[in-house]
Image (cartoon, rainbow, N blue to C red; front, side, top):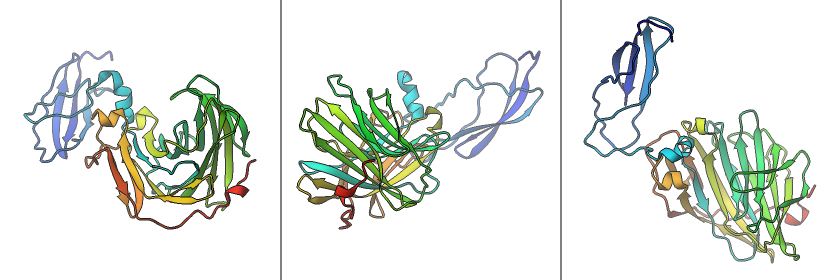
Length: 335
């Protein structure tokens, strides 16, 4: 920085206990901060704050060394630090009856839990997903279908008013459609996906979204996936942070009143869900994740470095609502 000398004072707060550290010189050094008692397992917060300096520079921190006789658990997989910064993704998986054509789910994001980078995925399936996102400058209703396993391209059949469609990369190339919509935390939104073979070697995937602001179903799109012959399978919901610089922000979501409708027109309520996590969670690179039943609804929670995590790979059961969807699937809009 062009200084002949360098002096500053910083405040380091460890688990709520503050220490003052004086830094001097222009070369890298290791400074002792202090000792704290950590009485319970969990994340330990470290805050650094500049107090005084003799120039315009407080210095740079290159690392943190911890000396302890206790076992340390931290993100130690250097090749996957990007994913560690993003934080763990968690899922709820639902088992639907054979030949289920429609899946219905409701989502509520509690007020204050809609951090930028959040994807509250409501209606997932083995070849894609649909849900709501918080992006930097707007909010999306998203519906995506991957290309076929043999490389066959997914193509757009039709889309609703205001819906944007394009192809994308990530989990795999495929078809992506989204609607810019300013959904609100605290409101409950309904989703329906329909999956059925077209009888000619492909499968059609459709999605609808019901905002309480308008009180009417909105059509997102229909995609055709070649070399596929299936109804609903791999049905799930998940919660993720997709911006690596936002992994320090916590987020939470509620899913409720899940139903599946068979090809014969019978609705079945789904009251059980399997709670799982991605590799960041299962490899213990981040442990700020939770899921279960809250006030009769399935919930997912991730990021923010909270300590009360919930063990993965267990099944939760919510109380039945008995509130079969009132929607007439035969009159859902298709344009």
